[in-house]
Image (cartoon, rainbow, N blue to C red):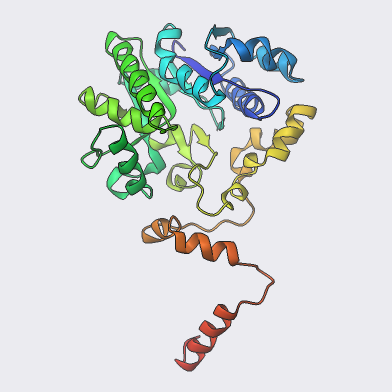
Length: 325
């Protein structure tokens, strides 16, 4: 399998990124025993938590190659992580499939070698940009970058990316890092707006990976059966309740992994669908947009399953008077 599998890590004892990466890389190695796993990290992490963590030994053993980059230790961890991500094409040799730490690999990834594209990713939330639930906020962020995103068809998720070792990709990543730094200076912390900007500047070289390669658990139901990688972390949370959708969003569980190893998540490693909550309802269309509104956030904050709601009672009376069941 010539394509490497690449993970990034900037972590310390105050977060659970190493634990997430340990679970994901373990699932990757389990389904791809002959594959080459590479870890890209910064010097502060390599000389600190990567040595001191209780998981240090088994985690490091998963990787054939560990690349350490000397970044400014005074920078915030988020910025150091994004500098590694936007610079990964310069730091790692050969073709690679980048895999975010907040994922679980569900099966062999050998098919990626046959995918005919130098640069590829999945659309964010498995939606065209016109239908994206966070379209308005994203357009506004891109405007702050000096980029008009309204004509963009695909707004790509950077959590799984196929990156071939080509001169064009080296140039692309240099531009992405420059755009990211410009955006960070303007207060834009995510890396995806600058990725979209770079894609447009370079005449849209990013090809679309099938959704199975980055099945985002909140929106990727149609890809679940054949998913290669499940991407469970929910960002842009609308109510604070999405952490109940997938069990690995629980910090308490990840802290158990820190102490006990993989034992608490063996069920999920065997079948990633077991990570879903026992009771889940699927929503689509306008409902997705409703859940991003302030109206929903306010109502959700007031909701109690056992508590009495005057509004609910009044609506029930209204339905009764109108002969609705």
